[in-house]
Image 1 (tube, rainbow, N blue to C red):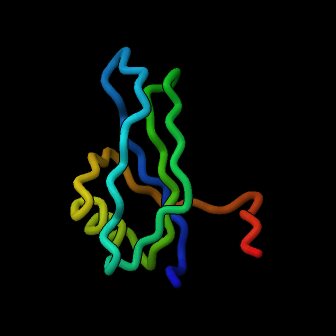
Image 2 (cartoon, rainbow, N blue to C red):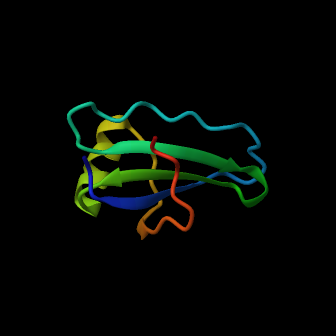
Length: 83
């Protein structure tokens, strides 16, 4: 299982209120999409992914055809219930 959490950000064109689609990450990438949120008012899509490192996230995003503007380490404040 991947070891760290990362925020992947994609900035939208001004006025685009549609929820942008995200293609599935490559199954063999070692990167797991946890959740993605589109915030139309801020024109941003934020995907939280688990992976071993930034390089794995970037490679998986490219493999899925994601437009990525920024990848940063993230920290759970309230972890998801994994039960």
